[in-house]
Image (cartoon, rainbow, N blue to C red):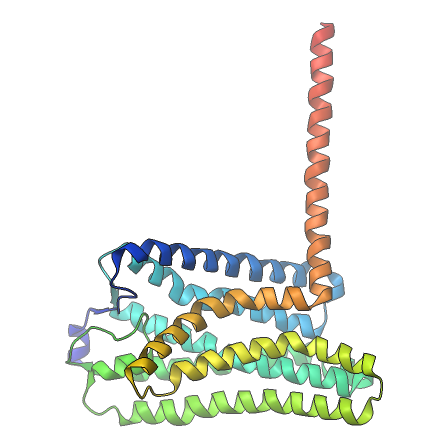
Length: 332
């Protein structure tokens, strides 16, 4: 505990050593961040404001959009600030806080994707009992379990990492604070931390992934065996297509990030996957759901159509008012 007080800050890895590329990378990340905020924010607004979307599927989609906004905000602002500054340091408390929320939100997304897969399974395989099984109380309970379980899971990692002594170089071999690069700088016994990563993290990730795939296995099996109508099969698979694309993108980048690298090329691949996982994936999620989900796309058109009509009406009223005033003053 005495050595912890001596650690005031860590030095983050430089994204690129080529100074002329840093403004380009900064603008790319800024555009992705704006897409993430606007896209997920729009989905969150329409899920709350559109009565037709007040269903379990869109309740969990709203949770996912809120999560993606927070997830990218954990790493992107700090990453962009290091691109514009020669100072790439992060305080010890800031590092542990970033680590906590990174694992907290990442674990929540994995559990939420599993719950959304279960929701699609119930909707397709048990449509008559869907409203009973996925009642509002059950949906709130499932979401609360996802958020609370992930919070305490991340708290375990942040507390166990914060109590370590750091006596090696304080230069992190990563763009943001994570458990693995921090353990590389720690001295003393880190076996418990490594065991927690291997057992708890892998168990949670594999369990969430297995339950998600199991839901889709039962959905495809049910449709192939019970449904002889190709139209029904196509509609059901289209409904699940958006969610399955998000699942594939999420677990694909997570796998590339946390599989131990075996060569220098694997290290570069790991870093690229980490950047993709924290920046590109949250920005793509709203686009995937909007482009492949007709109800979300129609709700967006109605929402922006109403706002555009309101703006047009206000403009027209302003023009009529100005015209009336100009005629009044001309008569005077």
